[in-house]
Each structure stands twice: as C-alpha cells, then as structure tokens.
Image (cartoon, rainbow over the protein chains, first blue to last red):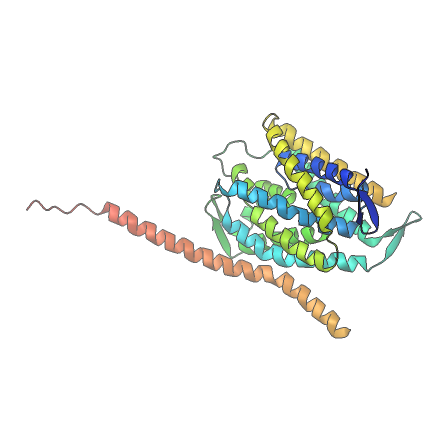
Amino acid sequence: MDWMLSVGGVEVAIVWLAALGSSVGLVAGMFGVGGGFLLIPLLHVVLSVPLPIAIGSGLCQTIATSLGSLLRYRKLGHAETRLDLLLLGGSIPGVTLGTMLLEALGDMGSITIGGKVIPLIQVIVSISFLLVFFSVSLMLWFKAPSSSDDTIKPGPLSRLQIPPKVNFPIAELNGVSAPLTCYIGLALGVLSGLLGIGGGVVLMPIMLYGFGFNIRKAAGTGIVVILVVATIGTVQHARLGNVHLGLALILMIGSASAAQIGASLTQHLPASTLRRGLALIIVAANVAFAFKVFT
Amino acid sequence: MGSTASTGWLYVAACLAAPAVWGVISAWIFGRIDARRQKTAGVAAAEKQRPPVDYSI
C-alpha cells in the first residue's frame, strides 16, 4: 500500500519522507548538528517539496531536535549563558527579517538564466545555501579546533575592539564586544528565517574559530538560541502558510530515532574523519540543490 | 500603500537597531554582575587574611 501525503500540491510517499528524515537524523546525530542544512535541499531536490514549505516545515522539525539536545546538554552545565543571551538579542529580530525577506522574494517573480525561467526565491536561496555552507565546509576541512581541553586562545572575533565589552566567565574569554555578538545573532536569525536551518552548523565554527571557544563549552552553548529561533521562525512561517505539520511530524519521528544511532556511531570514528565527512556531505547536498535549481 | 511601505521600513530599521541596544544593555548588566562578584571576592579574601583574634589574655 502506498501512503501519500499532499504537500503544497505535490504528492509525497510517506515511506520516502520517513527514510529521508531517518537519513538526515543519522547524519545529524553523528555530527551533533540539527541537520536543517541537509534536510531543506534534500526535501526540495529528492521529493520536489516546494521551497517555502520545505523551509517552514524544516524549522518546525528543528524545534524537536534542538529540544532533545537542550535536555541532553543541560545536565553537563557547560553552556555560556551570556553568549546565548547576547545572540538571542540579535537572532529574534533576525529571524523576523529573514522570514520577511523570503516572503518578499516569493513575490518578486522569476528570472531567466540560460533560457530557463527560474523563480527568484530559488536562485537567492540556493546561492545563499552554497555561499554559507561552502565556507563552513572549508573551515571544517582545513581548520582543526584546539585538541587540548585547557587551552583557551581568543579568536579574531574576541579581539575586535568594539565597545561595550563583556566577559564570558564559563568560556574563560574576556573583553568580547557585546554589539558585535548581537549582530552575529542577527545574521544567524536571518539565515534561519531565510533558509530554514537551525543555525547550529554555522554557529559552531563561529564559536570555535571566531571566538576561540573550547570545543566542550561550544557544544552546550547556542542550543537555547537555536530552539528560540526555530520556534519564532516556525510561528512566522506558519502565519504565511509555509508549515506542513504532517510533513514536520514524520520528519521528526524519523530523525529523532535515527539521531540516537548516529550519536552512538560517532564513538567509533576519529574526530578528523568526522569533520571532513561532514564537510563533504554539506558540499554534496548543496551542489545537488544548486544543480536542481539551475538545470 | 505608502504608509504600509514606510511602516515596513520602520520595522526593518527597528530590527536592525535592536541588537545594538540589546548589546549595550546586556554589557551594562553583565558589568554590574562582574563588579559585584569581584567586590564579594575581595571582601572574602580580606576576611581570610585577617589575623585570628587572640583570646588567651
């Protein structure tokens, strides 16, 4: 029996949705990320789900994954709450701006590239995906975070002299610019609203290489921001009719169960292999996405 | 129509200005918390350094 789900005028087989959710969950669990960077392109490329619905439902699914991570990491008590609070000040207006931008792009019509008429929303979203995730992949491929747990080396973002400054006692970083941190949150929020990603895969390199966070403290930080941004983004996308609850629910069930298997697989693989594996997966998913949009 | 467009731009401007305001307020609050912590730590250190009272007389 072939159970189908109607998503924005496209009939999608539920079994394929569950399989996609599980695959993304497996990868997300292995690398400790939400998986939105993989889910949105795959929903559009493999299952032909309309982009705004893939983005809105992807954000909805992120609420469940980030809530799970928050409950897991809360026990460890490593999160730098001050960074979370500063990022939230920027990401809350940011996700509103991102959603407004996506809505405006949807109304802008299409452009012709190489004789093919492509909706502008698809062009901008795929280019943004490529630019953001290609830089994330390059960082993951070439730069290894400090292996020693005790060394705290302030990164370039921690050294910028823009007042007023704050200290991060848990991360042991002093004199970090507060407005700059808030604007990083704004950029993350815009990306979440526009691309439907939680932002963990972007925030992690910023904390490790930008601020110079220790890898253990970076893991617990930012989850609250992702949860709040995903919740606000989901509400705003739902207002625009971009959230398909059935789709989000199937993806949630598939990804939540497979993420546990992915997390246990991580223990058997070296960190450098994991980093480079994630970089390759990100590039492959986004190249496939751009290929589908432009050809 | 014009007022809707200008309200939209005002909303965008508010969203862009909000992080700077939030950053300044947060830095002030965190600064106060740090100063209070330092003061408490200083008092505790002074208490530790004070010589014990000699009750033997």
